[in-house]
Amino acid sequence: MNKKTTHNVLKILFATLLALMLSMGAAAQWGPALVHNIDSLLGHPMFQRTQVAVYVYDLDADTVVYDRGCRQLMRPASVMKVLTSTVALQTLGADHPFKTTLSYSGTIENDTLLPDSVEQHNVLHGDLYLRGGFDPLFGPDDMKAFIQALRDRDIRRIDGTVYADLSFKDTLKWGHGWCWDDKATTLTPLLYNAKDIFMTRFMQSLDTDSIARPASYRRLTHTELECDTVILCCRTHTISQMIGRMMKESDNLFAESLFYQLGRSGRKAAEQEYAFIRQLSLNPDDYTVADGSGLSLYNYLTPELVVRVLRHAWNTPRLLNVLYPSLPIAGYDGTLKKRMKDTAAEGNIHAKTGTLSKVSTLAGYATTSSGSHLAFCIFNQGVLNSQEGRDFQDRVCLQMVK
Image (cartoon, rainbow, N blue to C red; front, side):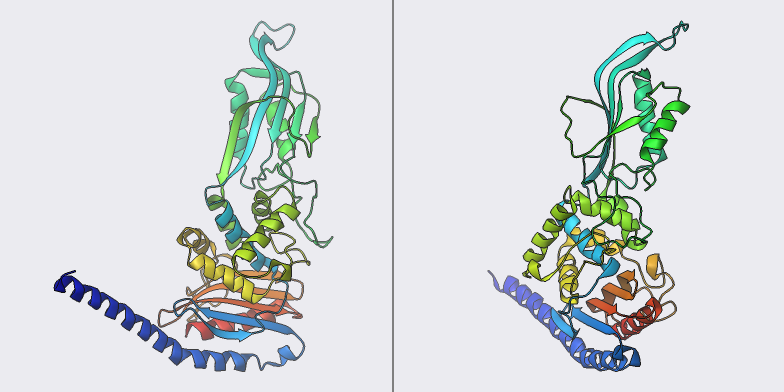
């Protein structure tokens, strides 16, 4: 290495060291003030009757900034979606497809549609299968593609049985630990416009297109097809296409759909999340994962775990590039659209909200006025109404970005 090269290397190392020292110096300046200010907020009378945990981590300095009960097990509500989405992105990838297929068994033969008709058409002498892949984005264009696939083969009559293949997941219609009065869509792998009306719409579409069909359809559950089938049409959407709605609007059905991509049952999907927790150097036995959306009252996480997940995503570009844009932005969109508006936190908080009865949560990323990046998690439990939890979280966020 010549002198010029050595000099350039030393300049780069010095600049890097200087930047690190400046960053640590900035953190040293605002860190104690942040601790003092959050401690002051925790002096509110509401915390004499409610539970709270706050954990803030400086991603640039790689150090804890604030910790109040970071290892307390609490219900995460929809902050659970942060874990679900990160595990899915890590395990499956952003391009993982949610598949819905139309296939048949038997033969397609030329025949007359009606005894007195001179026009020749094809008849399916066999069965039709609609196999669900739990795609919440399957909609009108996809249904038209299915009908067009039948038209392309000139099939005008189905002489066999129409099957709804629901074997993608277990037969549970609701998540483990959901309240009976939750207004939640039935969990089925065949969805149309995110509703459990797929087969009704498909049969209606056959009628509209004058394709003669059986009077009803049959369901296949927990069954792999024993006969060979020929795929007529396959429609797909990817995780990257659906994660925005899931996170921005906190769509529980979308979250459960993503959760079940990890396993055909809730138990198997949870095992994937426990394996991920172990990768974060935490003991999965210390937590409970019951669903993907956070609706379940059986979910128990800690702020420490949530921040570990956020840190892992931050340090993994392929995860962060999908996760970060999907998070609601304070004062701009999603479930944070009306929160922290016209404050220093507007635009500087990208975070997932969570709400259950007596539970309010918030977790995500904050950018400070000095340009530092933080990962944080705030759990409020036992609050009489969600608004008092949200108000506290907003005040903490305002302190973080100062």
